Image (cartoon, rainbow, N blue to C red):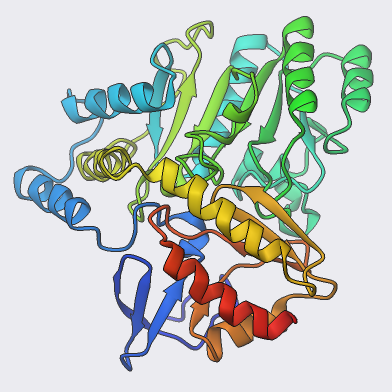
Length: 375
């Protein structure tokens, strides 16, 4: 049996990792500034992370959600405290797409409506409703095609207002920062205006923080650079530092009844151990502050380079737009300088999504290599 072809593969086989360093089977060392699609939040193979999971595995690795699991409550309490959403409830699942599926379902349950506003360049996942909310026809199968999603221009509040005046919507779903779309940040006035329209017309605001959350922007959630307080927040990626886990944070104003949502694997013992380890390291090592400090430094240095068209981002979610497609430069960074970086649907945009523990020295290593390629 052959493996299904998911992504174009680099001819590299990683066998070991620590911090932001990755080694392949030949012993070649790489600097990881992509973190496996923004998943590695506290660094590869963090000792506390390893110990937490090992200790839990020695006790019990899995049982379904048919039993009490205090680890789930511990994770919810700590996540609420560190994010500032103590009054919200937490539904645990396994991925960002699953989190968005359940968020959209909750919004429809709550409002009794079907239609949802999404935005150009959006990405919300590859499952049924999540992919239908994604602005990429090439990954939407006929079975996912539905008239329940209206795509509107990003950062255009007037168009959103016109849409609300014409029909009823269950929700608006928007990324805290558009990631795959090319690292585009919603304007504060736009996001706050959308929240106001949702309240006025009885729709829910869903903030997709799957990639932009968990400290990546320098705030716990990227929308916290504004005064917005969403009805529902979705998260995953850096939540487990590589262990599959996702979450839906649900406002106490939403009437989420028993039985509306369910999962077999979501919030299992090992997932919660991983999730707690991530939060403990983030707090102990002050990684949000590091994300802001090193992220600002990276963007400042990148803005000095003549061969760069635009630098977008917050914290350690950075998009570097070049005058031409960035594929050749990404390949040279990987093959010649041994540095992992990411791409975007905007072919000219190179994405940087390193672990929140990245150092200034590691940022300088990238800048020195990148400078030789774009100057």
